[in-house]
Length: 356
Image (cartoon, rainbow, N blue to C red; front, side, top):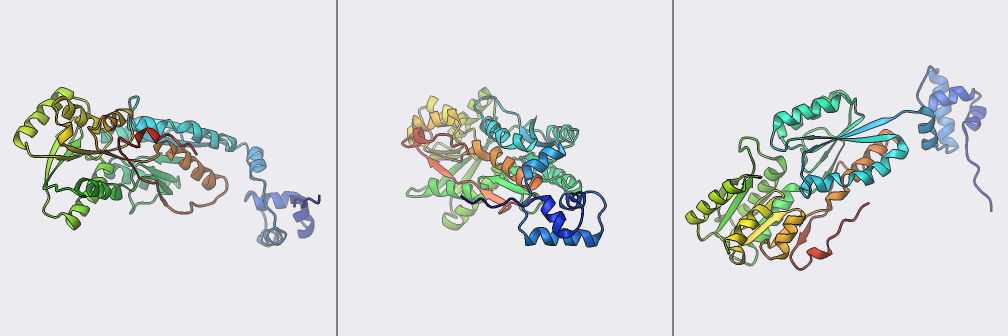
């Protein structure tokens, strides 16, 4: 069987009438080369279809890269735990290209903590940064700084379309909120909907939750404009406080039958409804297939979970960073929205991680 002869640097040098060292400097954009020689080498390389061996070039250069991920702190079984579990697959992709992946964490409810985390990130002199833009104003400032330093930034969890970043991977947050409103109001009358915000600090709203709420409102404005929304803030960790405010809420609004929350902690509401015997008379919707959320789904307390394959996000980021740093290939599209899956008690047990 005839094998196509591999074109080498020596072939280009012979055809161009220059040394192999000159060809090497042109192809790897290093050292001094006259413009005439550069143009001649590049023209011949294109004509004969030269394709560089990127792995060999990388090994020869001995260059190492650092990809840093900034994500919120998490406990086992929480949303960001699912994201972080994808780091093994991401590292497996990145290691052959001498790209190490480091993870830095900040308090999900503290802008100051996010700033301090970014300061630690920059001490690593990163070649790429993956970030969840939890707080819009801080995320914009961070992206501006990275852009000024020519460090590519990738967004996960939620995006800021008017900012400069290399790529986004995650759910379409506004569309997921739009979908949630449809699920709550389709085939049933929902004159009142309780919107439970789960946050420690009402002054620093979460970007992804606010984007979902915007999509939720858009759907209601278009299809159910007379629906009354009743808002309540509950705490992500203080169960005693939550019992008190939820009890007071249902005393004041005994006729509320439709409830939504826009982050991954719908199990907090489900626990209270089940304790009070309200689960059968309430339509409760939440997000993300956390173990405790799925448990509440399977026992019927949560009616729908809107979710995605979170475990693949970091692997997708790693491949994009490889393409950008090693192959100098831009993303096919800036925003890659992962499929939204609707889970019920009847299909949740079929939903398993699918690592790519």
